[in-house]
Structure formats: C-alpha cells, structure tokens
Length: 234
Image 1 (cartoon, rainbow, N blue to C red):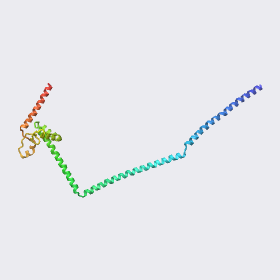
Image 2: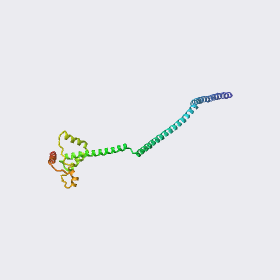
Image 3: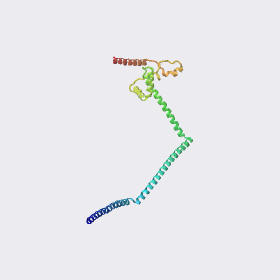
Image 4: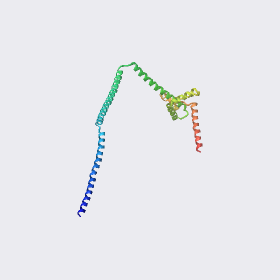
C-alpha cells in the first residue's frame, strides 16, 4: 500500500512539473512580442520626431504671417496713395478751370459764340426742312379732307428724310409740277381783315380746278374700294 502511495505522489509531481514548465514558458513568449511592438513604436517615433523639422515648420508659419502682414500694409498704402493722387489731380483740374475762367480769353469767347451760332442755325435749318417737307405732303394730299391733310403734314415733317428727296425726284426726274396752295391747306375760308390774313392765311386756300380734280380722284378711289368690298361680301 505504501508503494501505491509513493507511485501516486510521483505521478502527481510529474504532472505538476509539466504544468509548471508550461506556465513558465508563456510569460516568455508574451514578453518577446511586447518587446517587438515596443521596438517598432520606438523606431517609428524616433524617425518621425525630428526637432529640426518642427522648428522649420514653426519658423515658416511665422514668416508666412509676417509676409501677409507686409503685403496687406503695402496694398493699403498703395490704395491710399492712389486715392490721394486722384484727389490731388481733381483739385488741380478744378483750380486750373477756375483760374482760366477768371481770365478772359478772346479765342475761347469766339469759339463759344461760334458754337452757339452754329447750334441755333442748325436748329432753325432742321426745323425749316421739316416744315417744308410737311408742307409738300399736305399740298400733295389736297384731295383728302382737312384732318387727313393735317395728319399728312405731321408725318411728312417727321419723315422729311424720305419726302424731301422724293419731291426733288418728282420735280427734276419725273418733271412733275408741284402745286402749292398754301403752307398748310386746311380750310377754304377767305380771311378778310389784316389780322385774320396774318394768322389764318397760311391755313386757308382757294379752290381751283386742280384741287377739285384731286377731290374727285379721291372720291372715285373710295367708291371703287367700296364696290370691291361689296362684291367680296356678296
């Protein structure tokens, strides 16, 4: 029996020894892996942590900030200088204009007078040409009624650039005789007094064979147009 107990103790010692050897090897493997990870981290950190690079980055940031501040100050100074130069130029121009106005200049006065005369002459010339064109068209339409002749005078005046050349073409090329009744023939009333003649004569005309023939031609034109419209309606 004592031999059986001794053998069991021996087996248990063997098992305990085996487990002890296994437990002692596990910490050794874990320590090697940890050391390897720590080594990699150390090498990487040592490679990336460069004090010179950090100092360069800091100095560059400071230099960029200083350069921007200098550029802003320069731009602001240039803008103020340009503004001041423009204001000085305007002030000098105003001063020169004021100084020139104080001194009478014959050439300037003559030029201003000539320019004014030419402007007035051009205005009256244009007005005369427009009125003459309206006069031609109103007399040409003597066969129509008075409101139509007034309308002819208005659009003839506005479109003088067309009716003046057309009138000259009829005179010199077509050899047509232009009939002039009055400036603006609106009525056949005969003014009696001097005052009436002065104010109304340009708008009153006397009937003649030409005006009556023109009216008959217009009436025939209207009658023909009316007959055509009746035929189309039926």
